[in-house]
Amino acid sequence: MAFFRVEKLVKTFGGLTAVNGVSFDVEQGQIFGLIGPNGSGKTTLFNMISGVYTPTSGKVLYKDREIQGMKPHKICKLGIGRTFQVVKPLGRMTVRDNVIAASFSRVNSMGEARDNAMEILDFCGLTPVKATLAKSLPIAGRKRLEIARALATRPDLLLLDETAAGLNPTELLSAMNLIRRIRENGTTVIIIEHIMHVIMTISDRIHAINFGTTIAEGTPKEVAANQAVIEAYLGTDYA
Amino acid sequence: MKAAGSKMKKNLFPLLLLAGLALLPLVLESNYFLHLMILFLLWVVIGSSWNLLAGFTGQVSFGHAAFFGVGAYTAGLLFHHLQISPWWGMALGGVFAFLVGLPFGAICFPLRGAYFALASLALGEGIRHIATIAESFTGGMVGIMIMPTFVSKVPYYYITLFLASLSVLSIQLIMRSKPGYYFISIREDQDAAASLGVNTTLYKNVSLAISAFWTGMAGALYMNYMGFIDPHVVFSLHDYSVMAILVAIVGGVGTVYGPTVGAFIMVAFQELFRTGFFGLFAFLGKATGVAAVTALGDAVKKAHVLGFGILVIVVILYLPNGVVGDWEKIKRNVFRIHPAK
Image (tube, rainbow over all chains, first blue to last red; front, side, top):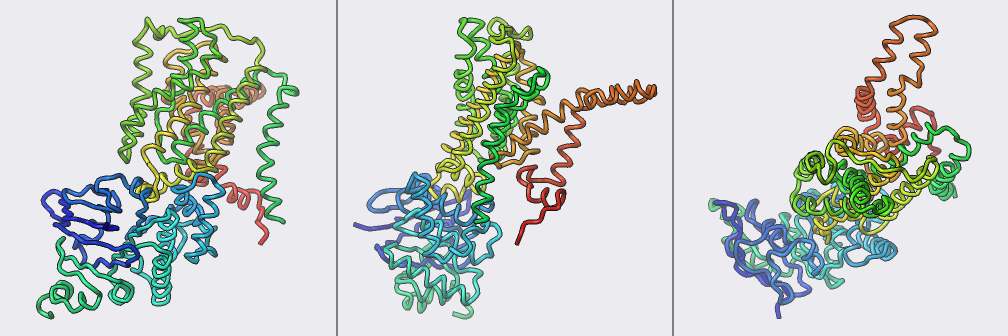
């Protein structure tokens, strides 16, 4: 049984094909990297997996169940959490209330939600800012809050969309550390990232796409050496 | 210790207010002021309901008159056609208002943006026309008259106080539990809310249902109390739909007690203008013998809508979060109280 698999996913917007027949498998416990130049369709893929978009064709299989076209809140309940590349903090709520709101996807009582939230805040290192309004957090805090909120829904599969972009080197190290600890807790992670040294260090497998189609898949080393990947990133002149 | 003390004070204040309001008829003998207090409490219900949907859930309604009017007509028509006590009509008024809101929510809430706001405007105006045209059923412009149950205003006062306390308490409890967190997360960001497992369409409808229910109850109580309704009174766009918005804005959108404060200010403000500052201008005109002062008094009486306009402009400019939302600011700038660091 496959833990998570996408099969020949296609998404068109009018005449534009954003994703054109992408397939991959993710094993439980992996950190699976998704790379590609800007506009190659990575976020569109995430949006199809998390239910924001319905694929034009193809399948998303999660624990042997077809989930393509389901509503985002249903997919969250199934155990797939996500963060947004353009962060979406619930601005006029405190950091703690953001995470409590997310905790209610698993528990119904205020007490349990609060306990779950405190545990997650602690795990993500957000306890010192728990009473701050989410809108007044700096970018590193907002990115961390995105992860904390997604974790509060107790996902088995976590989709991280550029959670390291815009962070300084110190913040970057602690973000990588956090992602590793999430995996150690048994959560499978699919991560989109532009910062090569981040994705190459933490991923077990990497899938590269360009113009909506797969150009390479393999271990970080294999993908880094792949001719098509180098061409996609640097152009044919330099490859 | 200090924080705990201030929290105690916060929880105590509404209770003290409630106790004060409960004792009021014992000291206040004037029917006129009791009438104003009943209006104030009715506005607490309507303003708080509007605030639940618009202030907390972010779904602005321009048609709360629809729910108010449907509640009033439910009570009135049940008595008129079936001789069912309008007090039974009160509970049913809430239910019918809820039923009227339901299809609108079902159609508009899967969509985002201004659709619900526009549809709610159409809902209020549409129902007003239906109530006017369907003469054989609603009495049309003639309206509906029922005999009030009580001669004294005191029982009405207590019933309205009970309804107002119940609605505010229910909203406070909701905002401290799962639905409340979901309402605010929908207001803040629908995509984020959905990704956190919030069924946004469902919870928007839940918010609408509760809001419509309480507003309908208020409408049915109005029927009982006033004894007369017609379509232009209870479905009025400016007297109910817009006034509900003003009550919340002045008091504080998205705060539990904002509409309560707003209701008091708005009812007082309206009465101040309607009576020409409680006859101050007329008195001055007579005392000084200057005709212009009397004329000014007449102009003020007619200008209460203008007064609302000015009040709202002042509030939006200086207290964008309303009196309750900007309470800290008021304390700092008006009373010169600075929080101890």
